[in-house]
Length: 163
Image 1 (cartoon, rainbow, N blue to C red):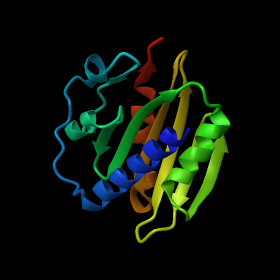
Image 2: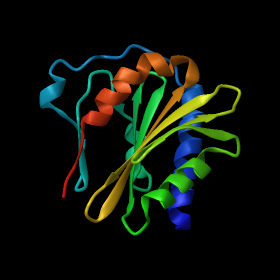
Image 3: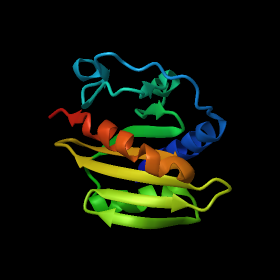
Image 4: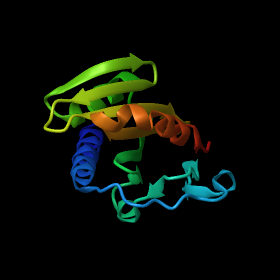
């Protein structure tokens, strides 16, 4: 239980630090994104989505994989299916910071907003697999969240869980 909290907290801190340091540089679009796979492992697969890139160093962390699109980051992690959705949601909210507000909640989705120098909006999706839960956390600076919403949804829809 503590491990999930530590993992989520670490993910958040790493992503916040990278968000503050990232510059929105030239992004090379993929020509035929629909036929390519951006990332695949034994638990899930993510189809290529134009503009999204795999953050290579993220493959060396504890099963967390980080993707970027400008100033938006998507963190995909897997956790044991032993915990309930409510427990995972509670830990996900707790991993952001002491000053976080839940702005929307659905059965398998949370939206949170931090109160920082640069506010971050977190879109958190929870997927249940047979042996593992998949948690997808999108972190976007508040000022670009609305304009990146379509790309967040497109990326999220490109994820498929293997059973």
